[in-house]
Structure formats: C-alpha cells, structure tokens
Amino acid sequence: MSIRMAASAPLIMRIMASSLSIAEKAGEVIRDIMSTGDLNVVDKGQKNFDPQTEADRKCQQIIIGSLSKQYKDLKIIGEEGAEDLSKIPQELIVDKIDSQFLEQYKCPESFKDISENDLVVWVDPLDGTGEYVAGFVENVTVLIGIAFRDTSIAGIIHQPFFKCATTNKMGRTIWGLKELGTSGYNKKSPPENKLILTTTRSHSNEIVNATIEAIKADEVLKVGGCGFKVLQLLEGKAHCYVFASPGCKKWDTCSPEAILEADGGILTDILGKHYNYGPNVEYPNRTGVLATAKGIDHESLLERIPIATKESLIKKK
Ligand SMILES: Nc1ncnc2c1ncn2[C@@H]1O[C@H](COP(=O)(O)O)[C@@H](OP(=O)(O)O)[C@H]1O
Ligand SMILES: [Mg+2]
Ligand SMILES: [Mg+2]
Ligand SMILES: [Mg+2]
Image 1 (cartoon, rainbow, N blue to C red):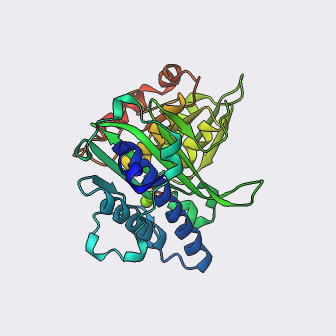
Image 2: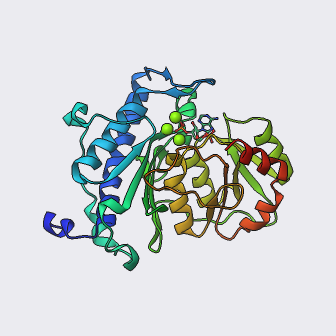
C-alpha cells in the first residue's frame, strides 16, 4: 500500500495500524530491558509498593511520542503521567504503520467520520509490572485503548513474552474493534459445566477475597495484569474476571474492554455499568471490574456479587 493510500484510510483504522507497529516496538524494549538484568525499579506507591521500571517509562515514551507525532490533536493519557514530548529521544519514535492491517480490514460505517477531537487514547505501557519484576513474564502486556465519545471502541494488547509454538517467534499482538471484530489469539470457549474465575495475583484484600468466595467458582486462577486476565477469557481459560477493588485504572480496562466486547464478551464494573473513558474522567475504576467471556451470563454473575461488596465500593467513591 502506498503512503498516500494509507493516509486516506479512516482515522480510527490508521491509529490502530500505527498502534500495532508501536506496540511491537514496546514489546521489544520490554524484552531487551529484562535481558539486561537491571529493571531500575522505582516505588511510586503512596501506601503500598507500586513498582515502575525502566520499561514502563521507556514504553510510555515510545507510545505517546510516536502517536503524538502522527496525530497531533489526539488526547493521550498514559499511566506514567504527562510526557514532555520535546524530551523524548528520536530513536524511540516509531513512524511505521501496519499496512497489511489497512489492506485487509474495512472500517465499520459508524466509525468512518471520526475526528481526533472525538477520541481519547488510554495507554498502559506495561500492564503487570509486579509480575514483570517477580519474573511471571507471560502475564505482561502492553495496552493501547481507544475511546470514542466516552465509550471504549478499540484496543490493542501486545504480549511480549508469548512464544509462538511453530515459529519460536517472541511476542504476539491481539486487536479488537467494535463492529469489525478481533484477531491475534486462539478463539476458544471456556469449558461447559464448570466455572473458572480469574483474579489478581498481587492486589487482593478482604473484600476482593470475600467476593471471590461468594461467587463459588470451581477454580480460581490468580494471575497478574488486566490485559492477561482478559486474554484468558478470550482464549477459553476462564469464564469470568472478578476484581472487587478500586485499584484498576482506565488505562487498564479500556483496551481489554473493547477487545472482549468486540469478541462477544462483556466488561463492566461490579454494578454492571460500563466505565466512561471520556477526556475528563477520573482515572480509578472505583467500582471494580467484572468481565465475562462470550456466551457467559454476565447478569447471573452480577447477582452473585454480595450486596456488602457493592455497598463498600460505592461508599469508597
Ligand atoms: N491496589 C492497587 N494499587 C495499585 N494498582 C493496582 C491496584 N490494584 C490493581 N492495580 C493495577 O491494576 C493492574 C492489574 O492489577 P492486577 O495484576 O492486580 O490484576 C495493574 O496494572 P500495572 O501493572 O500496569 O500497574 C495494577 O498495578
Ligand atoms: Mg495496568
Ligand atoms: Mg502499567
Ligand atoms: Mg503500574
């Protein structure tokens, strides 16, 4: 595809095609920094340990620097705070665009006339930092989510330490766009006649645990990262993701929500409401996360969440 043809594709498709290339580069950097053996960890927590590594900082610069250069009026919010664009080293800027994506997929009618001012991009440069530091590298993902007028519509999840069984290639990229579909993973339904719940590995507390107890799942998986847990739903490894805590932020859920919902699943808070991803919202997802795989009854899981849990998260608002 010529540069002119790529430039004529609808904005949302171009942002996705750019983000696919940018997320791959972030994944390379995440692997490279791990291989140096020095993650250069800073604790950014106020009460509890909340690690930030060299990879979180560098990947945020890659993603925000590259998208801002190509899309000057786009509002981009990243976990690691505001970026001074003039201080981002030139070698971190990716100006490649995934032309194969643009050739292969057509923009859904409803998103054809979007302008940069209608969008917010939510960036989690490294989701699962605790797991990156602890060595559970499979849990690590790069998340780029795109919201159109308050609603999450598109997402990219890049998993840098996924190893392809046939080619041995490291890293895979999953994407989803509502009304178009999803790609990049092994689409599978979770097993019938049992309930597998996935939840946090490192951020549990009394309410988180009491809520899991009340759901009465047959199996509970404890893994890191919002991106990785939603991947488990997409690949049939779990039926639901339950996190009754205000700890997740908009950059954690924006991309996974769009991909899961483009696949047929649902991601809401624990009251059943979708989060608002508009330009001026607060960052925390104060009323928790409940996500269900395609074909799983979201309503019946909402009913299993204790009233005490719901009241406690509403009170914390
Ligand atoms: N109590 C808490 N304090 C800080 N961050 C929290 C948190 N609970 C969840 N998160 C954030 O939500 C994401 C998913 O959490 P978990 O792995 O526990 O499910 C992680 O993103 P990051 O790794 O990008 O910071 C994590 O930091
Ligand atoms: Mg995160
Ligand atoms: Mg992060
Ligand atoms: Mg973090």
